[in-house]
Amino acid sequence: MTEFDPARDADTTERRWQEGTDTFGRIYEVALGVTDPTPYTEIAEIADCSPNAAKKHLERLTEMGIVRADRESRPARYERNQAYLEWQDASRIADELTVDEIIDRVKRLEEERAEYEEQFDTTDPTTVSVFDYEDHERVHEQMAAVSDWQGVIRDIRLYELARQLSQNDGHLIPA
Image 1 (tube, rainbow, N blue to C red):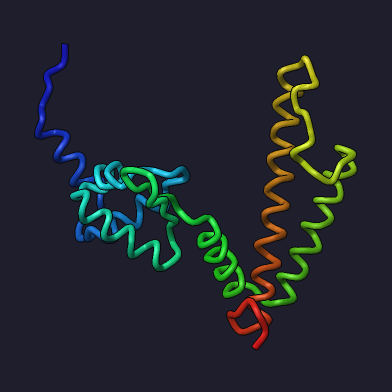
Image 2 (tube, one colour; image 1 turned 90 degrees about the horizontal axis):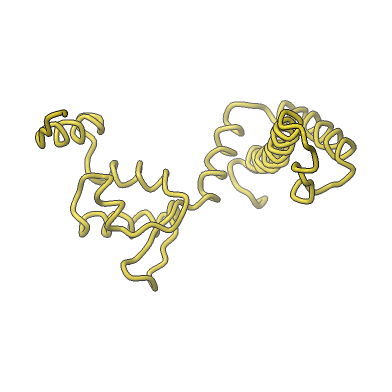
């Protein structure tokens, strides 16, 4: 039987966050990891802060467009705004690559997408049934291929967004 040491949990919690990370920073980090609507009280617990502080900072993150709020539920629930993360990724790509490099990448991705469409005889990966095989290895291969195909489709959207940002000096819509 192992001994229970309550102080050990407190030490672990303190070490989980980088030294000097303030409450807002902890809430921000937790919010970016929240993929389903989560009560602010749970976010507070994970971020090691009071529920009131969590709610205050989550409201600020909502105003900034980083998280989405469901204030109708009790307690209010929050989740990351996936569109914000996609915009962030596209901005990074636009900063790192030239427009020509982005266009070349989109062309290669579109070729990959076309290969998947030919392989599966459809343009929509969600219509593919990966369980049509009795062989476990074949099912796994199909699942991996469909997942990669969905990643290609996502990357095409990101690189197209990056192209728009790059061609319009950081704006989505030309000035």
